[in-house]
Amino acid sequence: MSAAIVFIHGLAKKPPPEKLREIWIDWLGRDNPMPSAFEPPNDGLVLEAEGITDHFVYWADVFYGKAYDTDYSAYESFEGLEVVRAEVLGGADAPAPAAVPANAREAAFLAGFEAKLSAQPVLQPAPPSTHEGAAAAGLEIASWLPEPIKQAVIKKAAMEAYYYLFDKEFDSPGGQRVKVRQHLRSLVLAQVAQARQQADRVIVVSHSMGTMLAYDVLRNCAECPPVDTLFTLGSPLGVQEVQDELKAQGQDSVDFPAEKLGHWINVYDPLDPVCGADPKFVNDYAEVSGKRVVDIEESNWGKWRHTITHYLAGTQLRRELRRAATEG
Image (tube, rainbow, N blue to C red; front, side, top):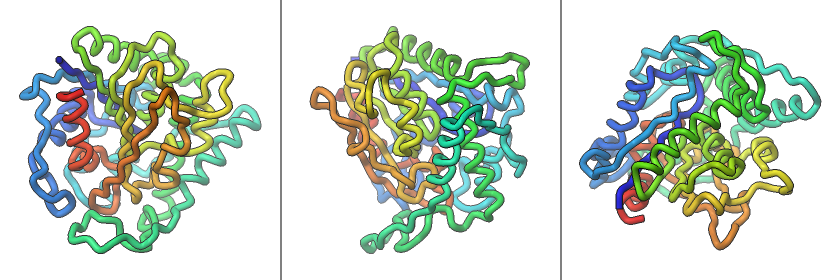
């Protein structure tokens, strides 16, 4: 059976579309990319060699236009503040466009979302490990970030989530005014539809804020084609304020989008500040028709754990993705 993967990127300014796709494909295909974190053998998944086609949902230009991030070092770097400056802040400490709430509900969302990302829960001591990528005992999530940088990251994540979840109009740098949720949904739906036309099996691999798009389309868009497996990486879908805005009409809580989805695998690093507040989903998203989320903890390496290249290097992620694409 043929397979196609739809990739959906995460928050902040990004490299140009083709360059970003190249980075994702390259890192997924690297053999043993970080042996100190993931013990060899950790063979790469080379999509072309496996006959797997891919599609990329690129949505950063809605917020940031064509002022692309050209500092690609963040995707190769393993440590530090400069990675955050390049990857999340676009190489500068300038604040994100303001998210200005229009009512009490929107204000409560922003306050709650920002509080969750600011909480920095202290992790419980982990078993001894020879891998430097393992979680360190008592280490606070992103505690090493200078407070102004930390707040800039939180504000940017909150802004993007706010504009999407409340379907706010945004004056895109290209001169187009868009309803953000409607527009981004259409981008995802188009790529999933193309993948479904080309392959027997469709897999969605989403990261960070892109996981909100993936879940929303699968649960709340009747026109979405069926998807065999959804992967969510470093996802904020565990945050209650996000869940409240993604509930299907008439539902009291979020659940597994069983009508459109076969399997859901959520991969998290407990030191990832975007998902660290509530990284596990199995108890949040109700089981439907015997289908439930599978949560996988996979600690990677370095101080800034949210980078997509780190997730794509993971042994467990690669094993599950290969199984979904080649075995069904």
